[in-house]
Length: 182
Length: 65
Image (cartoon, rainbow over all chains, first blue to last red; front, side):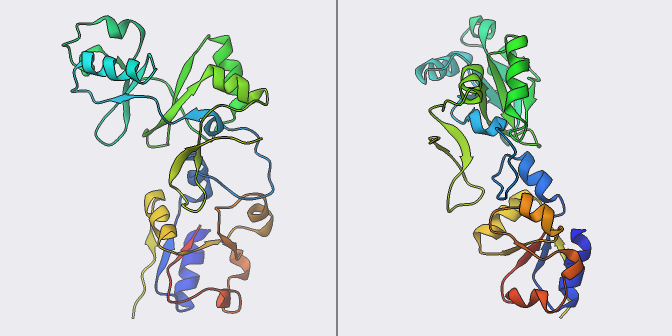
């Protein structure tokens, strides 16, 4: 539909016309905010924390472990130079020689979810599989944050987590952690 | 002057919005009312004529979706 609209605008004399062909579906899939009357319910983005530690594949494991525990986490997400999630460091991975590289120790191809997915069904699946943390990415696989089961359960029950990943006011598309006020 | 419609991805969309582009949702009114990109105005494709586009500035970029 939008290509026809763009052409029509061009015919009407507009000479700076752009067509966001992927449209609102792509916008929502990236977890960006939408306006409107439709109540979409809680989404994964509502409970996603942006501050999970990250590591690059070529880094030394010991340094990443120090940074991760120092930030109060026991897990880190491995991203490439474009921010694409390529691995995960958790559990036994930390037992490897501290001098080894992250790429040798990491768990490959972690499962990820999109931020626009419905939160409540995911909470059920996480509880069933005893999953503590799920990595959240945009449709291109770039890291957005981490969904912790305790946050998901609390939010689904009507409580608020300390931080969430949301579009910030006045700067569309620029994400920032803000407290939920309910 | 020959204008060329440029297809853009989400990153470019965000940049254009930040630069003050006008965002036009050309979906039917009901779909717009339910959900739309923040700041977008609704001109359904069926009504996209000279009169409807009078609300748009010609000196600023227009993004449709």
